[in-house]
Length: 237
Image (cartoon, rainbow, N blue to C red; front, side):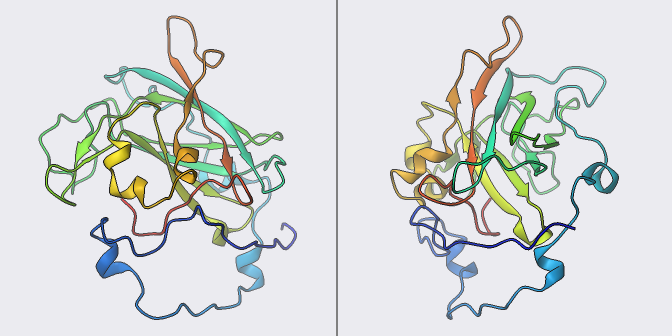
């Protein structure tokens, strides 16, 4: 079991529950003040160093899960998970999920006519090392339409879910790609005020790029503090 963990207050970079431009937050956001329920010991402690036995081995390469390579541009995404003081956060599970290179999720509710890729599931899992580092290989996801408003398209993005030292510490965010014009007109991204929004945008990194194989992107996740990564409520798409 881990030691008890403390929580600090959210900063101004965290999106509000109600963002009228993001239509689904209107019926889903709370209408009454939240009731804070003290967390119990079982919610504040959890497994330490035994994620493989609970969840199985890491799935760090999303391009080798099937019989052939998936379609699309292969990329490497790497970075560190840091706490509010810039210290590495080791042994943190990072689950990832995304659309394929055509912008299609392998999900029964995704009905638009972009092609599915039989060699791409779009889900993986890694665990940070002693220095808080993570790394996974995938393909760059495509943009896709969604029904929020007329001619609405989501920017290319990868979902990241962090499961910390306790099950109740799960945080979810999205990683975007630099120079994507859809970010500026996306209601989900714009629920986060500037300059905090830029913390969700990865940066191209030539050192992470593998010659003749895959482009590299860096994306650090900061849990709290002045440089905290904005995280989502449960209702975000």
